[in-house]
Length: 194
Image (tube, rainbow, N blue to C red; front, side):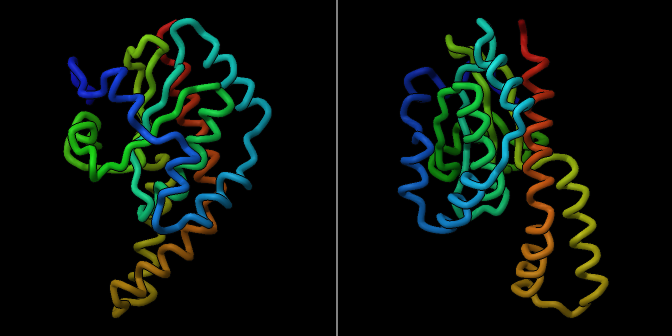
């Protein structure tokens, strides 16, 4: 939960990477980030909703994202968050989680987990509106089912093989999970003060 007095001041927010700068400096998964960003089809009605939200006087104007380039949820989600920022004309800043644990500590999943990506929304005058963490609920459910199925089909599978199989199976669900991110963010942003 966001603290009453945040470590994310307007000045600190400005220190984050812009999307293109973040992508330029990452070490792994660059091609996957670029493909997801290029290929994700933001639906016209979603783009229109985000434009309206971004124009509201007390609506979202800034988005902070905590991320790491090695994380599968970040690879799937950050390009979509960038599309949201573009459509809503939000100022996006990305902070590597492992170098910004003080920020991460404000937005722990279930108060305990350093889950990423974490997207935090602020008004133009830097008032906190809300945040979204890691992946959509449908992805949590489906990923759990994928993991159970892999273990049932291959009880002796090694950790490395399990990770490969999990990634292969979840990759097929990526477009639906990415669209679910948009829907959850729309729900979050529609609840922000008018």
